Amino acid sequence: MSNADLPKIGFIGLGLMGKPMSGNLLKKGYTITVYNRSKKSVEELEAVGAKSASSPKEVAENSEIVIAMVTDAPDVEEVILGPQGVIHGASKGMIVIDMSTNSPDTANLVALGLEKKGLDFLDAPVSGGDKGAKEGTLTIMVGGKKEVFDRCLPVFKALGKTITYVGRTGSGQAMKLCNQVAVSIHTVATSEALLFGTSLGLKADDILKVLTSGAANSWNLQNLGPKIVARDFEPGFKAAHLYKDLKAVIRSLEKENLTLPAATTAYELFGAVLASKSGEKGTQVVARVLEKLAEREIK
Ligand code: NAP
View 1 (tube, rainbow, N blue to C red):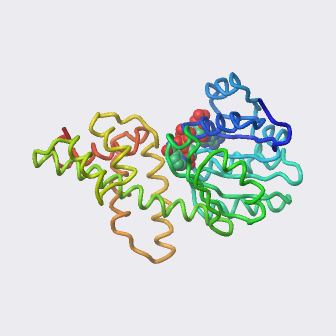
View 2 (view 1 turned 60 degrees about the vertical axis):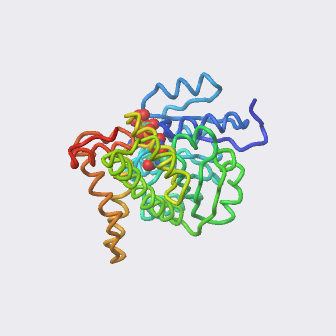
């Protein structure tokens, strides 16, 4: 049941994250208009009450708040500022929120483009995986004007559990890249611990049981460890997406004149994942690269 008092939401990008996030907004009573390049997920959301639009521009014409959850920086620029973009259908007072992962530079560029038309923008990337998107328990980190954040807080609460305002435009993306530094290293750490332990003759299930109950515990060990052991490399979060995030980290390292050796190693390992044509697999597939280097399997 939709609630007429709630703002009308537009949602662009209905992939592994965007589809369940849109579904959660519908469940909370929001009226939503969706757009996706490929049509299967649009039809699935229409079946549970969403309206559909033929372009991001048309989404904006029917919405008070528009959320983008697409892949990378050029995609965000295209759906927001491009010829068929949100900016051309927006009316005064509309708020645009980018929840994809890209970079502080992209957030600033998009915010500036929208500002010229008097439109507000928040960068609000997320963490918590497809599981968090489905369960509505995402961690959301938000940059932009505080008063705009306050107005959008109920919408964020429909999508996530831990919602933090982290500062001016671009700060949300900066926080997310910081998150990706830790995530990528944890994913490699999970794979290496399993590879090392099983090489020493330990049982993989025992390794996971012991490590997740002590100081080594992490989201990756808990959620991706069992998948590696079960040889399940289907994506919750695609390896190609983590590689794009690490590329943004590496670019800012050069700008900041900073060295992060472990994140740089993770970047190279995920580069090897893409070179082995496994970018569309889940990030846990990095275990296969390490297995190849070691010429042995985790079992
Ligand atoms: P995904 O499954 O690949 O979905 C991406 C969606 O964006 C697809 O619906 C795609 O449309 C659409 N899209 C991409 N480029 C577009 C363009 N130029 N114009 C219109 N639509 C476009 O990716 P995802 O896992 O949902 O991730 C989305 C974003 O969230 C990424 O920035 C990712 O890094 C971030 N993220 C993901 C996770 C996770 O665990 N999956 C967690 C946190 C953050 P098509 O269907 O037509 O290709």
